[in-house]
Length: 266
Image (tube, rainbow, N blue to C red; front, side, top):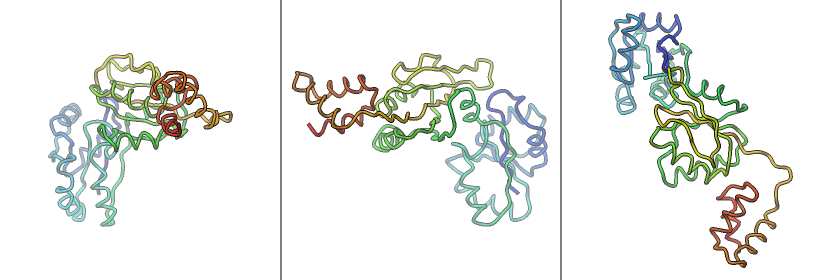
């Protein structure tokens, strides 16, 4: 049996009795980073063999793990923090066990995205995106697809990329309410409520979970023909096309890419 065991995302007290029992009973524990996991395991006096299992070796480790579980061993999988398989290793071995019809179970517990969503004050349904692709067409195309969704979207963002995140999402979505959670369950936990246009104003430290409100349904949306007409007037009045697009976006709180595409008609 494979057990996917959720572990604390910050405060070491946030672990269930069942999780501790499962880790103590396992034949061995798969760890994203054995050094990080050792802190938790030592804290709870869990003395078990730890096997490194991360995104760079999970495919090559799969066959041996499948064989062990076929032989009746109990294997526990933990990530550095939170629930395995959510932007952390786990999906590969889960798929392999499904293919081989082998047993597995989740020992539930902390999840950063759930904590951040609850603290955001935003509404369900939500869509979890995780880490965005690096800059480029893939990132641009994904944000454009998400821009029309009325669902709250949730992202993981590294601290040194938080400013770029706000710029890129604003360019695709227009202005939206945002909730940025960092250092969840830790001493310096902080949740900052801001807007895409205003940018992030909190401390740039720790890992971020960012919730962005969904697109609002406007039953009185301005017609495309009106936007094109006003763009044409602005350009004929001396503005560049780029300046005209920016003016219309601000005037009607519209997404930049949407107005830019309409500007191609003039």
